[in-house]
Length: 92
Image (cartoon, rainbow, N blue to C red):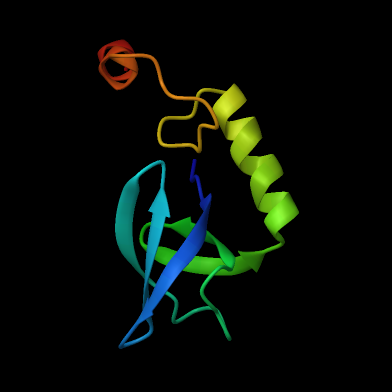
């Protein structure tokens, strides 16, 4: 099973790359597969590639559902409890 995550584009970089940030973690991704990506756009990212642009409302709804489902790395509007990531790793 594959999982793609909506992430906001923070900066456009050379060579069809972009910097994205989710829950305080920044990553450099390829935007070569999506036309006309701009700073502030939400893109669906899987294995380091933006697959498509998303409407900001749809991105917010998806991230909230991922948070409710406790998907590790999903956007959290509330601070994570101390040790939350360690507990998730121990359960897998």
